Length: 265
Image (cartoon, rainbow, N blue to C red):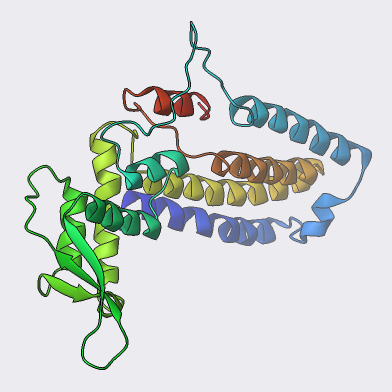
């Protein structure tokens, strides 16, 4: 068991352990008893909620716009040497199946794949992908894996034949694309890993909120303060995931630099 799995396991057990201990010492377990709208309970909940929302709004809820000196001239052409899949990950902060498709189409436009509609025998015409003789010396690793997955059984493949077997290669291409962007410094860490960490923190915090509600409700009859903690964290999660993970170092191109300026810090 990894440390991360151990933390998640222990955090998931904590509320149940707390309930058993509380029952042993005579605490009230019924959750509605801790949320009674007494003046003190309401005041504690409101104060906790307002302070928490102010912190979340200050940290994640607004755009941090970078003001660049001088005149900024708009550019309508894509940055040089920027692949379509890379641009999609940069803008949305995650890899998707469409990135693999975009890579295949981009390879066809650059002459590495030939896509034609052919008729074979008396059957209806079908789309066929054919690997050309173009040298792949300047291809990136995820592009090589795309070609390897497409033409694993020969230089020609029917589009319909890819469905039952290409999904494995799609996962490998997405992982390699994500890793390539991290190695090139576009992201501090893999976006999927960052989202997983935030999701873990969210679950742990929600469980902590339940425990705080339970403890404050029994000790001081202020269970609404703990409920406010959970509410604030849910709002924080929605604010964080509205935005893509901020790149660690965007490529040295003006359009991408402007896009990075609008991402949250």
